[in-house]
Amino acid sequence: MNDAQRFLLGYDFEAPLAVERVDPPGEDGLARLSYRSANGERVPALLALGAPGGAAILLQHGGGESKDHPLIRMLLRRWSAAGLTCLAIDAPGHGERAGGAQAPRRSFFEYIRLRLQNAIDLRRAIDLLQCEAGIDPGRIGYWGVSMGGSVGVMLLAADSRVRAACLCLAGARSRRAWPEVDPGVERFVAANLDLMALAPLTAGREVLLLNGKHDETVPAGDARRLFDALGEPKAQRWFAAGHRVTPAMLRASKEFFDRALA
Image 1 (cartoon, rainbow, N blue to C red):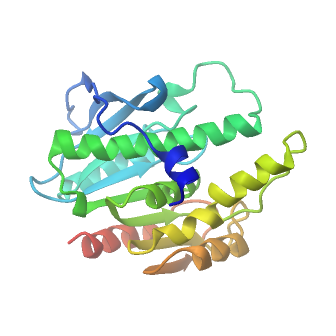
Image 2 (spheres, rainbow, N blue to C red):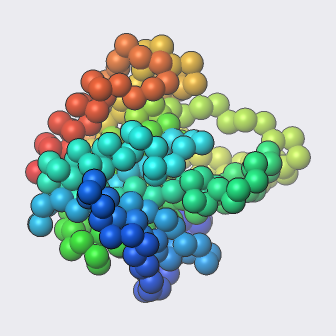
């Protein structure tokens, strides 16, 4: 990373996590907790412990969803039962962090701030996995869908502790126009925080892209553009699906982690 990226995606590694356990594990094995991230934010999370000494997976939901989405909860239960410790968080502006009132249309700077916060929250989640669950940093994976896939690229670029990532329904979309923003600021963001600028920094970690052939939200061209920009090693698989996660994608995800984090 360059100096600007290190500054924007960095945080105080020595700041206490101040973990608060909201609910102990229920019958489904999921424990609710929260931890302290950067900028005074507290991050709500669901934790499912796997086998002692095993690998761990961070899970990030898609836009408009939350850590309590049925798909995320199912993966937490299923993968922890298979021995993987799993941690899912609410992204800024989602789930318990939504604030209640309908969110207004976000400005350029708010959009960037939330994405940066999300990436730093995930870096702090890795700290939590190491401190609270004793996870070896060489055995941490990441699974993100749609928005979570995009944020995953930022996380991989910023944090070498993630050894393998499965990005579902993700792609490098054409940048939207922000007419109210100074062109110099846009150029700075494009050079330092755009997925096409960050994707090459994933080199050395295994990345698997899972995309739908009929996805209208993330068209095939955008998915291929992100894949081409990613560092090696990488792979991309296509499924007969639109913008939704299918059982075949989940099987491919689990097989990938079983091999990459063995």
